[in-house]
Length: 479
Image (tube, rainbow, N blue to C red):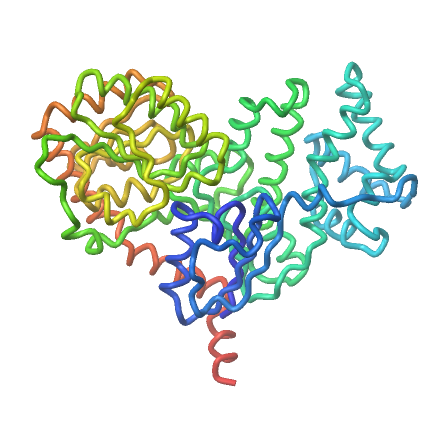
């Protein structure tokens, strides 16, 4: 069977998290061929893969969201949209009303347009935008509305005009642009579509936009509704939707996904692979680790603030922030400046490392994210019998405390961005070795019982077989 995995902002450009999850599926299913449809943020990422692609990856299709910067259109054409096409585009731009995505796909991929930007410089588009301005933004200069909506919508239009490789099954690993590509693939090729949602993409974009300086206040709702519309596209098109824990399922249903489509397959970790790792030297230090990309959504600044309080109470504590730093270089620079300004000498940014070389040496692990799905970093730490202090995001609370499984807590859960409570949890574990060890034992028992890697792989193998047509694949293989 040929399976096309559609990923945005992850595999194969970025390590860890969702990327590790994708790589694991591909390597553990050598019986299938895989096509990677990789959606990156910037064209400078082209070919810059962080993974050695397995032999069963037969094609990589790269597409970059900043391609719109190089797209110019011819001004003033009229393309004679039908009333239905007009209504669909108006609903997409405003975030109000039902969108028939099939009609949008057909329109934007038609030969009417030489390129996507031709539509955004057309009289038809101006008509729709003028109506949006009158209805919702009558106090905003039209030029601001024009350029804001253009920057918002043109990457989507370019995405829709890209060709999608043929496959027997399409698997989008988020909503957003990856979800739209999956829906487009189903529309064009008539093959099944599977969606796996790790975190809730539209909620994450909403959090980012609310805090963003690059979006003016009166346009924030426009951007937020746009990303919810993209999620609605794949929720409607997907044959099955997989999430990692029950709270995410509830949110997906709240956002309009058919509950009958949604199933839960938790992440898994190969527990045996974390046995007998190098342990810490007996030098009197308390080692605190964070396996994390240095990006805003992981809230490294709150981690630094927390550690400043920890270091006052536990001067022999050292914080190791283990993960790539180049994804958002400006944010990394700000974190370094913060460390210097607070005169924190016991913080080490390791950059990208082999986690197994470090994680066994940690006494405590922490995660301060403002959004997560079901973090592999926590599962890996639990497999090493390490206690965690984590924010209450995604399934972190469920991982740490369990679901009435009788095992006991594997760490402490704190509110998001509450650096004093985060620090308090870390200090408590630093000062109580027995508590650290008992929570570590609970962590190991929970991950061993409920989050096995082989169970996760078996679930997806069965899912691929049921959706992709196992009989067709067998017939094809025999010919």
